[in-house]
Length: 328
Image (cartoon, rainbow, N blue to C red):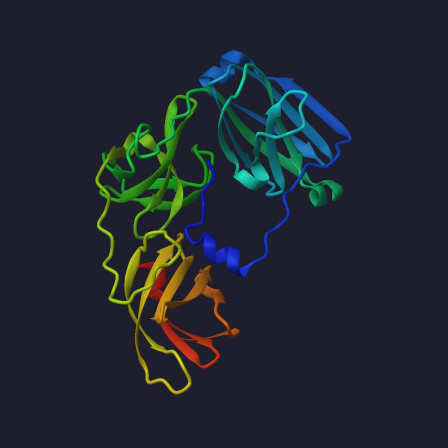
């Protein structure tokens, strides 16, 4: 289940779209059939790819079953496709859809999980070690209606914190921490072997990842921050915080306060929407704690003193404290 950036609309307006990746024409294809008992139990296979090799794992399934696949690897250029055996059109493309798949099978038959290095990495004869989780059964997706609640709350922790991981298993890196009482948006759950893992987004901080489902209980939606009068609309995603920030919106304008809303995407990453009047909004994208782009008619310049950013867009100036981005 791919995780979507909450300010994807802003990204689309500021950067070009990368072409869809495809596997290389492999010099060597290695094929291995997955034991049905291993697939039904949710097993893992480990291996290595070098250069233009392709590794194909074959899984027999029936219509309506869910084929669950997740990939952890030492090489960010390693991806997989899922497709019916002896067909060329992929049902799932990890380079586009993400490295966690829960795919309802459309028909009885044998399905291929095809691992490959991206063309440039293959031509450099790079090596990729990997662990591939493969399960066949019932993926559990939450849609807020039949598959599960919209929101979870962390409960039952006996340790200080619950690890938020980059994928649905303990072999994935820790990308954040959660504590008892933290509220999370439910992005869908699935089984990794015998354990239930859930894709989440933490309310307030925007940290996204996977957590063990045994520590989650259903809860009500958190209260949304009040939007100041004349405040921004954003891209349709609920704001993590709103308020007022100092601004100058024209060369002959006096300093004033402008309403803003922020959507956070984990530590240091956020989209800030600023309403300047007349239905006009300025959008500033932060990555790694620094502003990297703005949707505005003038080129962005940045000044920083202490923990205060000043965003300069021609004659316009916007003062944004780091706390707006981090939630601190």
